[in-house]
Length: 216
Image 1 (cartoon, rainbow, N blue to C red):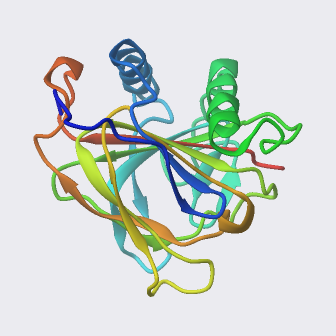
Image 2 (cartoon, rainbow, N blue to C red):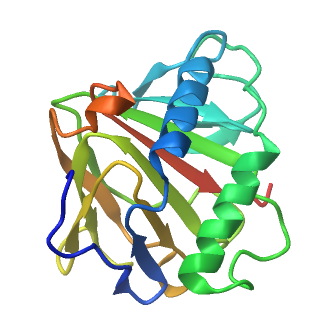
Image 3 (cartoon, rainbow, N blue to C red):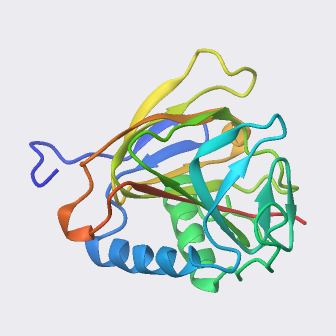
């Protein structure tokens, strides 16, 4: 929103899970969007993810560092065009570590560099079911960056896809970090609010960039 009666404050959603509102200023958001547009181009560009059961995810995806597919990692886009995955830039590691330090303290990220990015593009009708980020061999916190349309981010528990959960409004420029006891919590995006992106960003839809340490 252009104006807030009260600024949105940092909020702990669960132990090890922290929402950091408005951490990416407009210039940083535009730079990230420009980078995402380059990463989305082929080869190894934006694709529709197909599940083992024959379904498709409504959010489309491109990967950096290693290519994620249900349910593992590869060096090439094995369920896309087969091209080598694009490299993970060092500045994303710096961004991730800064977010983890802000959210959980300087020791939380650990010594290994962040080396994987999953970038999901959500159109107006896209959503993401509750799932866990459990294909990595590292327990380092996951860092989530939001660009474009506001979404409802549902953050649940580590045991089941059912309640209890907390719904969090993620806007363009927000960060969300989850690690420690919440590292394997179920989470998802039940809906996106179309038309809520900052006009100056020039994005229709939502981009979510999740940064992870592979441990591979």
